[in-house]
Image (cartoon, rainbow over all chains, first blue to last red; front, side, top):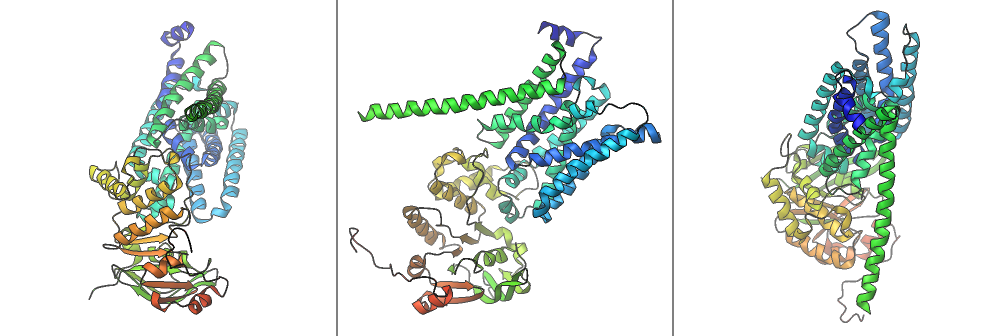
Length: 295
Length: 248
């Protein structure tokens, strides 16, 4: 622990501070959007968007290194690919529901294929591993500004339309009857999911996006009475998972993304067991009390 | 001239070239209590969705208060038939009823007056004390009332109910019918129902739907009329006598 603190304080290791700042900042977007995703049960859509991000990143790398667009950060490609995937999936799920899963599966795989082909044709060596499995310790100070900007965007829109998104997740037909433009708001919500997914890719990598989006929300769902409560708890949990994950990965020299996810998964399983046991024993307790009162 | 609450003129609707509603021509006046009856798949829910403008007629024209259903949608409170909600959804009773106030503002939180209207609706249904409870912890009958409260929080002028008693026990059903009668003093009520016993006793007018849509006063409903509507697939049981002490 003291090793971690001295690491954070060490002026020669800014990457640790950047990693922590990135993790804590983006946790707010993760908590809010993760709760919408879990409540509306669209984590597979988030998965497809995440994998299509690789297509955008690959295109970005190619444009940067082969064509010479130095300014084109691969993450800009990632954001564009995520938004396109979100809008395509959103329109399909609104207008051709029976084809939804096929389209989601195709976008998932095609996005990856496009990314791998671009990366293969990009001159020089690019390691796709850091995009697939993430490396929060590689975040630079300029990345931090992108993260801050996207985070603020997601939070502002999420708060402004909280009531409408909640109604959309709970009872879409009712929202439509109240004159809410359901298609438009659903697409907006998916776009916010897309932006959040890009942030997640920077923190834990494409493959583990769904885990960090849904586990904190699922854990908070065990003891939340309101959707906003679920968002608040998920945000706090995200901060804990990411901070602890970075700490462990730094001290024991482990891959950061995998450490964060494993820690989150362990806590979730422990809480599920704890809740099941608690229910069982409190149930027995009540039954015994009733029996006692009856005697 | 005063416009009727709902007016259908030669309305037909097809699902994949299969006629579900054919040549419907009727109107419902303001303040009426009308029941829609008919066999399953006969087009009752389709009729409600046409009134709300969720489905567009393939032929004919529909008016709600003399205007298009789309523009009048917010004047309609709708209680859907199925009550299948995600019980894992973290939401309280008050949160659900507040949804009735959606669309009042383009963004931002609900106002104080929205909360006030939601609480008023909850108290009308005698469940004001449940406001802070989670939707998952209350019973099926209570949940039904929560959804009715949500519909009332919309402050509708027409109430459309799709088989409101399908999932509740007879005690809740009785209370619900009494409540609807009371509401009918200021609202137009249109209810899909299978309960002909209730319909015969309390409703002055029924709309029979089996592709054809026919409006009858209840006094005209004879066993023959019901049999032709349901194509002889049902038995008619009279239960309009009151039994005392549980003895027939």
